[in-house]
Structure formats: C-alpha cells, structure tokens
Image (cartoon, rainbow, N blue to C red; front, side):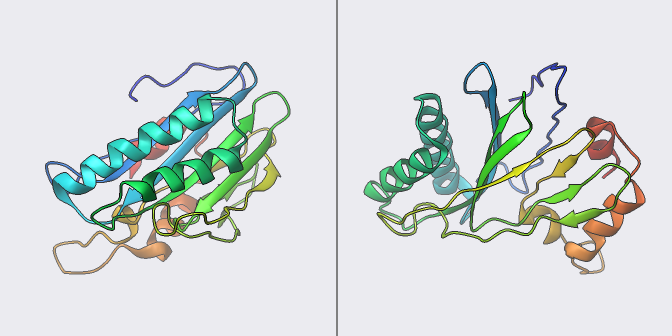
Length: 201
C-alpha cells in the first residue's frame, strides 16, 4: 500500500525498490479492528516470477487470516499450513508480523525467520529488537509459531527491513551490513519523522 494512514496515535511509512523487475519482498499494514492495527514485512526465497507469485499468495493469506478475527498465532499457523499445501516449488518466506493495540500500545508479534527489527526508545539509541525466530513460513507444515508481547510508549520508533538493505553491495563490492545500518539510524536518532528517516537512506 502507498496510502499511509493519518492517525493520532502513530505514524507509519514504508518504501520498496525491487532489485529486478519483479521481486518477492513485501510489506503490508491494515486495520484489523477498531483498536488493532497490523503491520508486517516479509522476504520470499528466490527471485523473479515464481517468488512474486508466491509473495502475492502469502500476502493475501496473511491479511485474510488476520482480518477474519483469528488470534495472531492462529493466523500465522493457518497461513503456514495453507502455503505448505500448494508449495510445489519449495519456496518459503521470512516475515516479521505485529499486531498493535493502538489504545494501550501493547504489541503482539512473531518472527518467522526474519531479520530482527530495530527499536528506538525516546531519547535513546536504536538497538536490535531481541526476539527468538521461528521457522520461515512455508517451510514445514503444522509448525506451531510462537508469539511474544511488548509495549510501545510515546515516541518509540521501530525500523523493520529485509536483507535487501543489509546485503546490498556498492560499486566497490562492499556489503552494506548490519553495522552500517545501525550506524546510519543512530546518526539520525533524533529524526522523529519516519517519512524523512526513510528518504535519507
């Protein structure tokens, strides 16, 4: 989605530039109920048309299962099994998925083998969000995904990304890496506008 919601409780912004004409990375965000907002970022194994088709299916399944009123854990488990049923090319995707109670700041999340996001508390530095990773989606049928909870407070910022950022190479063949990413974010830790933060990258 390109229409970012104007909400008194939070700001969200995202950007994606595919390395090829089509790719398997994606993000999504949507309102699940009056008080719950979901956001996710994911990366499909492989490139090109097969990865793109798998991505579209996964994106649709995740959204539908969350909008159906399922718990986060049930929605992820159902999505994984549905992907495994039709996964003839043995593709999989890593994903970070979060469900935010926008009134209390309570956040339930799951990490399906994805790069850990970074979190900045007010007047603090960015740090990698410490969490255990489950298996990627589509890798094993009937795997039980674990969810965890935390709480956002005023002026917290979470930065999520795919390895398209950290594994990018410059003209000299140097990989961007996690160290450069956290260094960039901490040089801009006082930037409160998430749109401007992404534009600076």
